[in-house]
Length: 424
Image 1 (tube, rainbow, N blue to C red):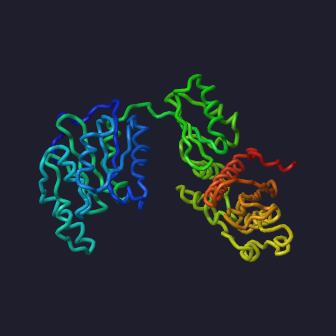
Image 2 (image 1 turned 60 degrees about the vertical axis):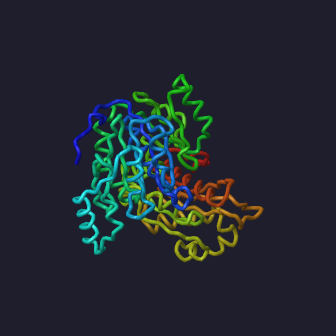
């Protein structure tokens, strides 16, 4: 391990960061680059400014050029990928070229790589030896999940390069072990502002309301996070939580950036209520969203993925005559599905969904984009029809997000946006 350079950033303050992802597979669209998002989401709350994201290929010279001539000046550049054993893994050499130093082999690192592979029944190849080379003066960052060590290079003129493996399990572990402790030691206090989360609110209308509350248009950041979901980040020390709850009621999911599903799990656990599902057109997408959240097992009892009419009949006891009379995509059928799911699961609340996602299957009465949702709770059973536009994927995604919204509002005892009351 090398001693900290005099130019190492050691004090809290305004630190600008650039992020580079390396790999032809990213540029060709064979894999989706997501490490930049991870870095931004972790460093921004600590007071770092992520100035840019960049993807470069494996062609010799591309990374070195980006390092020597970045889009804008930064104090830190974080690189992911290109640390493997093959000829196109050139990050080590590219950093050395950018800094103007030679590569040097570390016998201790080579021995660690050999031990790591042999312990897993893999015979080290000559290519693996390449991973034991580093730009002269760089610091190794140990990798407990793979053979590729990371690098930290403190630049003579100021600034730092971090290089981490691109394999997700290795990258994420090394971010937690090496990058975050370094960043937390340089974090600026009280820089993280409140994050407000909304669903089914037009972005333009929401932005107008935020500006009206703040009195200025340059103090907040608004982001369309996903289908129908919007996040608003406020400056530190400002809270609009109560105002947003009064104005938007059930369409205000909450604070913290955890998504509607995160708030749903939190609300169910806090209130001691349980949830079950009966999905048709969403094919398990709602269940997946819920079970992606840690500790969802404390509130989600399970569900049925009844895509076909025969499964609706055999698993949820929907009468065949009901499907014949009203259609599988109808209020009568989703109410029967929700009631059966609640009764058979023992859950406090059950939601069902059935729709026509397209591109075919629509009729004059039930065109593509029609989605019915049913809800069964201690208050009774009811249903609501939605009509959305878009392709198959969008309709399913919108249905999934609205289902989470309906469940969250129900668990909180709120009126569901645009649903009639049971007394209506």
